[in-house]
Length: 219
Image (cartoon, rainbow, N blue to C red; front, side, top):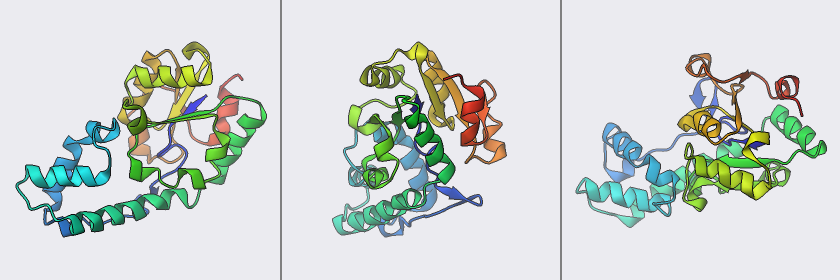
């Protein structure tokens, strides 16, 4: 069984607001321009083309003809690192109970996450890490969801076939579509999602609470 990480096992949101945010003011770029440039580089950030967050900032500055001030880059990088630690500090107990129950049932557990290095610095410090038999971070394997190869790699690492495997995720990055194309059965985890977002995805069974996994899936 495979899980997504963000908005499936951990969440950046609480009461419809980000738990932690950070400022890019030090870069001297307005927010609208920065968001556009950041989004344009999403795929390359996820697949490891950029080795780290700082390299993304340098590229954005250079493309906009802005001076590259390493001290300012360091400042913004540290702010982002600190904000990305927050979701790992309070793991939902229902998620942990679900994973532990699966572990007790000898179900092989794999993680497949689209992420960048600074987003998972605290992974090993959490109780989640010891529950998984295999962990795939997209930037490390140079593949990102929904590329079918990343799911095939996960199955290979666990020694299972796609047809006997399940993928559970919130649905971002078309990950459920990718999982299905790779041959896995896909379920949407909606327990952290606002209704308006979860309703956008209609082609996959929904799990509203972690415990529901055991009601709808035959193990």
